[in-house]
Image (cartoon, rainbow, N blue to C red; front, side):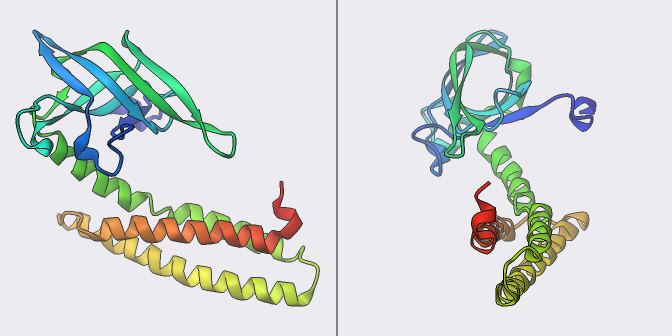
Amino acid sequence: MPGIQRGETLWCQGYSEPNAGSDLASLKTRATRNGDHYLVNGQKIWTTQAHWADMMFCLVRTDSTVKQQQGISFLLIDMKTPGLEVRPIYSIDGHHHLNEVYFTDVKVPVENLVGQEGMGWTIAKFLLTHERTTIAGVADIHYEINRLKSAIDALPTETDKQLAVRRLAGLEVDLMALEYTNFRTVAATDEGKPFGPESSGLKIKGTELQQRVSQAMVEIGGLMSLP
C-alpha cells in the first residue's frame, strides 16, 4: 500500500479477453492449483499500461464445473514472472498505452489469491463500481473546457466567438450536472452506503460528455485543431 500511495508500485487490470470483453463472465484464462502455487495460462487484451506495470490484479477461471460467475477467482500477479509476455497494441492516434498479455504456465503463489476461490466476480464488481465513478472524468473535462475558453479569442470573427461561447455554456451546464452527481455518489460512501447503478450512469454520461468536448475542440478550433 505505501508503494501504491507514493506512485512507486504501478498496477494494471487483467479483466478483458479476446472473447470476453463486455461478456466478462466468459473469460477463459485458467489458473490451476499446483501445491503452493497456481499455474496460469491464457490471454488478456486491452490491458492499459501493462508495459509499465509492476503488478496485475487478474480474473482467472479456477473452476469450470460451476456457473460461470462462480468459477472465477482474483489473483495478484507479478509482471516479471517467467512465462508472462506483454505485446503492444497501438491505437489509431499512434500511442501505445494498450497491450495484449499472454500467460504460459505462469507460477503465482497461492498467497496471492484475494479472498477465496470463486469470489473473483464479486470482488471485480465491487472494484468496477469505484472505477466507473472516477472514470466520469470530471477534472479532465474541466481542463479541456478551460483550454477551449483560452482559444476563443483567436477565432477570426465575432460571430464565431459568440457561437463558441454558446456551445461552451451548454457543455459547462452538463458538466455541472455530472460533477454534482459525482459529489452525491462519493458523499453517500462517506455515510457507509454502497455504490449503486448511478456509478454506471456516471461512466456513460462522462464518456458522452468527453466525446462532445473533443468534437467541440475540433469544430471550434478549425485549422488550429489539426496539431
